[in-house]
Image (cartoon, rainbow, N blue to C red; front, side):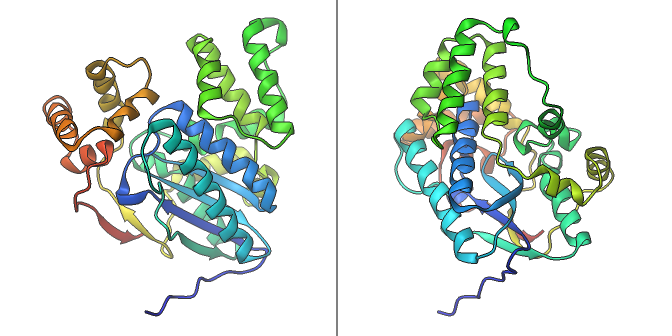
Length: 316
């Protein structure tokens, strides 16, 4: 079987697209997003790749990066996906890979092409109905750019002792190029109230920050111009064959709330217990989700990790 040679231009931007195995959901709670983000950031330093943009969606991710060598990019992707899969599986009790073995990629040369890709990646949550504007989504990290540049942080005197203690743990782990495990993160969050959990998440993102924001903003001149461009157009990507799901992702929030009540668990993250249930138990939950939400059969199967042939693909 002949494999198509991957296109690559040394030092130029490259759009990376990774989807989960079977299109299954991966990111259920804030812990999933943060553990992935920390691993991604630490491994990016290791391979010295330049990260311009990252957007974490429920069952796939987009990255815009630059590197001198294709091998560095491939090794970087293999490293962080396998490391995250190990942590995710250890936490949830499931087995096997999380992401599809092959990943989509397309080199981007020329400012126009790069700007269109930046907009496309940033607008992924808008296209899925999660938010009205790209800067309203936490996990494309765009809203943090302005905060990072301002350097403004909440004064320590306004923070509780326990939150300060955990922030210092984050600082120490980051300085040693180590990420915080699910267990470590859960212990911290169990000791904090909802507002403090939110502040801890912000601190983790801004401490582990992997992005070259100056490089990103060079293509627009300013943060305001970039966000304005995202609000005026959706961008496009014709060089990567992306798995396409036409449904809105907004229903997943209701599904998680429903499962929290049904399973009697305290957090979104704990809903992942469904991943190791028997097929019979999953089908019972599928019936509940079908009765009480507007989720499609495809969305329910992806949420519960029930493999069915349901998705289509398109060049986007």
